[in-house]
Length: 394
Ligand code: NZQ
Ligand code: ZN
View 1 (spheres, rainbow, N blue to C red):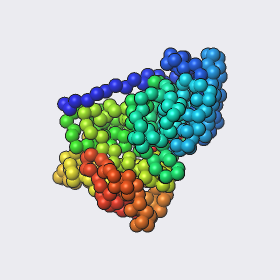
View 2 (spheres, rainbow, N blue to C red):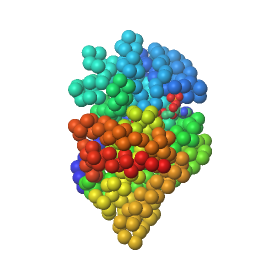
View 3 (tube, protein in one colour):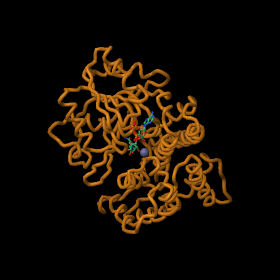
View 4 (spheres, rainbow, N blue to C red):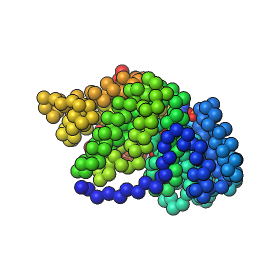
């Protein structure tokens, strides 16, 4: 087996009514003055915010609430949040929502703990995070895995750059996972979540150094479980079994477990970030729209790996390794289509893009030729351009 480090400090409280423990969890992790952060209003409409505010007040916690996080969240909002947290002397940040809210809270927590440094400097790697405030999560959408992950993704609207930061300071101290809080999700967002959960797993599964058997078996089981329950969940977001399986798959897909011992690839994620920064499309949709084109471009790097994926995830075998590999890619795209997820730019809703836009996105993805992306096959600006070109159709 390849060596690895695994340290996931997030306390998970899973199941019906688990959000009723939020105040006691905040106290357990030392919070007394809480900044509650939420998104565009779904958590207000469901009554969740009011319930949490009442609960915190009854527990004697001081709190201040701040709504309005945009999907694919903005750096500017996080800056404002950090300012508010400092003004109110908050010692705990509570995220109520999905990846966008959680990532904003991670940034607010870092910003509040480092008042003399602009938040973005941590994202551009000019500064290293050495302290932060604790963040707790009440999750309302199964998708990003941010509730247990070490990363946070922000978009700087000024430069149009969407960028992630990975640091152990980004791991939330607790995550409250009540599948019933996801019942109000529209089918499209459920499907975006399914795509994202699959991609967190696949972006680890396709890597150049796969020797850890248990890691691979966990990844394949997680993919089968997500695929199976995803079909039910997009049709009925009130199915407790399907929504709860998805919720746990989402958290495990991105806390590191499905890639232990391997080098993360994450090229489709990097290609997708350009799409969501430029066109403000949902993160999960940006990934499914690009994955098939990425897979067809890279599969020859390790045909056996793709053939194994086809066999163990989709139950498909071909007359040759190559035909099995292709069948697995095709099955994945068919599945995305069956749950309403795009598999190219036209179905993503951005239309066929001019050549110039493809070139600009490829440049953006490589930070103007200063980096390459991926590990399964290392992609340079020309490779990325070719993948965007292949996806630029209907
Ligand atoms: O803003 P509200 O009104 O709450 O509506 C949200 C939003 O429109 C809605 N929603 C959430 N819970 C709901 C609900 N609507 C009805 N009922 C509910 N229970 O869903 C929409 C999407 O929310 P968002 O938080 O944007 O979704 P997601 O969890 O997919 O997060 C996406 C963001 O996370 C980043 C993505 O890049 C993107 O910016 N990621 C973060 C990662 C991490 N930190 O580890 C990893 C991921 O790969 C990803 O990059
Ligand atoms: Zn993702």
